[in-house]
Amino acid sequence: MFWLDPRFAIGILLVAASVVGVWAVVHTADRTTTVLAAASAIAPGDRVTTSDLRRVQVRLGDSGKRYMTAERMPAAGVVVTRAVGPGELLPVAAVGDADSVTSARVVLSVRGPLAASVIAGSVVDVWSAAAIDGGGFGPPAVLAEKAAVVRVVADDGMVRTGDGVSVEVQVPRRSLPAVLQAQANGDAVSVIAAAAQAGS
Image 1 (tube, one colour):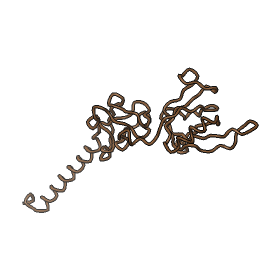
Image 2: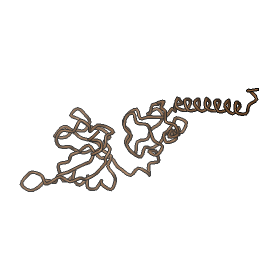
Image 3: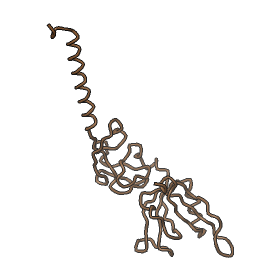
């Protein structure tokens, strides 16, 4: 009889395996993971807790282990070691302790207007042009690359300058002496959106 035919049994098994396989693929595709994202810009050195973040559900598959979840977050919070933009998922690799932060914050008095892309959380390069005898400034040079903007302070902010704008940035510690010297010398300091960001 046909239902005793081995080929019939094998066919049934193949169909069943196919159905189970399709169900597993669909189930995996629909599975979401709840991870933590920045509610606002986070600068290196900031300590954050779950109250500073928001929970979002995303489809990440196996890569979900790379991001912080509420369950992984210690009650005391964590120190963020690199800039995290608003809405960005918080990577596990971007948290550590205060000793792992390799940058420092400084408020820069900026000459001229800022580009619209220079906002809290953006990445910029810091340039300066040295003052020269007789007035004017020499050719500009890069003081610090890939500095994170902490905040921009305009006329009505707490920090005021002659040009009306100051920018608080997180600069690599190795670049800090040059940045501070340029500020002390009264050089013309500018912040420019980093190349990769400027093109986005």
